[in-house]
Amino acid sequence: MPESPRILVVDDDATAGAVLAEVLAKAGYEVELAGGGIEAVERGQRQPVDVVLTDIKMPDMDGMAVLKRFREFSPDTSIILLTAFGAIDSAIEAIKGGAYDYISKPFKKDEVLLTIRRALDQRRLLSENLRYRQELRDRYQFSNIIGSSRVMIDVYKQVARVANGRGPVLLQGESGTGKELIARAIHYNGPRANAPFVAVNCAALTESLLESELFGHEKGAFTGAIAVKPGLFEQASGGTILLDEVGDMTTALQAKLLRVLQEQEIRRVGGDKLISVDIRVLASTNRDLSSMVRKEQFREDLYYRLNGVTITLPPLRDRREDIPMLAYHFIQKCAIHSSQRVVGISPEALMILQQAEWPGNVRELEHTIESAVIMTSHEIILPNDLPVALRESPPVATTPEFPDLVTLKELEKQYLVRILNETRGNKTQTAKILGIDRRTLYRMAERFGLDLADE
Image (cartoon, rainbow, N blue to C red; front, side, top):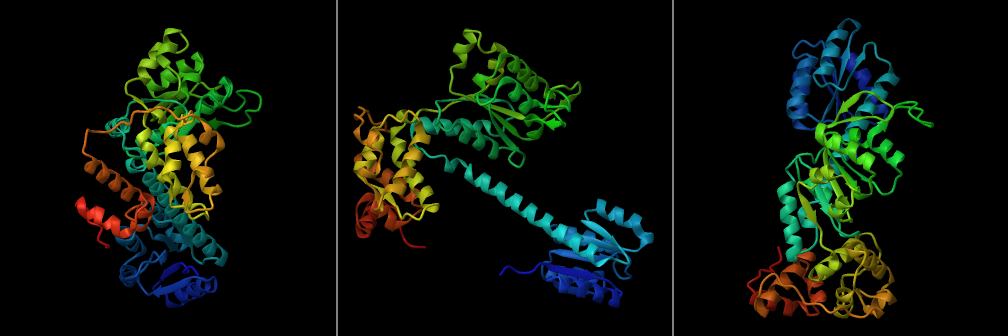
């Protein structure tokens, strides 16, 4: 059972404080009573409280001072001021100083309970929002973008260089190569990480709908515009907007986008007022924009504005050496959300994956692994767990790409380190993937100078 919220009631009037404490205790809260401001601060420093209800007028330390002290050592605690009718000005001043709300004396039971419930709801929402943002940051750290091939290392370097910038970035690559993942990595590793990230698919909407979606509209701007609607540019202000498949945007909208990039201001559909926005624009495309410029299908000035920094994401067929790492990553990801206990993939099945064409790139590989995890009845994915079309497709002649010309021993070490990283140091799982027992694993690690000692 979760703990009841802790409420601290502060009042130098013992009778008034006791009445209020009784009301709160009957509502299911854990209540403490302090007879003055100094005692309240001491209690709050000894043990955290969720909400403080404090009288303003107290002889030893008034409610304003209590508010100030709690803001210093416990800024997450919600402070509610109790005030007589003649002290409303002080209560309003307290709100400016960070108090959640004030309640007039003589208070009403329902008003007190409603105010506390709202204060606790606000704390919960703030906590969930912070946790959500941290989860997003964790999810889009560079370490969660999988691949150690030379071409992907180049991508990581480019992302690291542009993350702290303000200018537009153009992401190029085939469908399924992870353009949005890279866009989010740029956002969540930069100074705008705590601001909104908004993505819109320019190919999925008609010109009029896309314009309304991006710029918003005024009431009566067109049939069905029954109210003012801020657009995505406004919603993303302070943060980042990703224009996915920007090559599908009409030339009329391209001109308006150019103005946003140049002036950082927009005008809603049907409106006259210019609205300032502070956004970083990222754009992605699977089309050749330079060719479209030559054919006058894409504005040259917009292209050069977006093309300040271009990051090209390689297709999976050009980074086949990343397929084992990606496969193990997706297996682990699926295992979290599945009742299936799958820990690896057989060498034969892995060879099939590495020889496939993958027209859908990383996205297609992920869907294939998800399906195989569901279909297999073993702890490792076998060839028969893969789609028939994949198993029967002719193998692709490939030349393995290595980061350097290294000895076989060094290559074995690199592969062992990769599997250990993917399994997060799980020796049993690593041994299964490598097809060896734990004793052999320890001998290998000793030979390579790796410490596998249990912590």
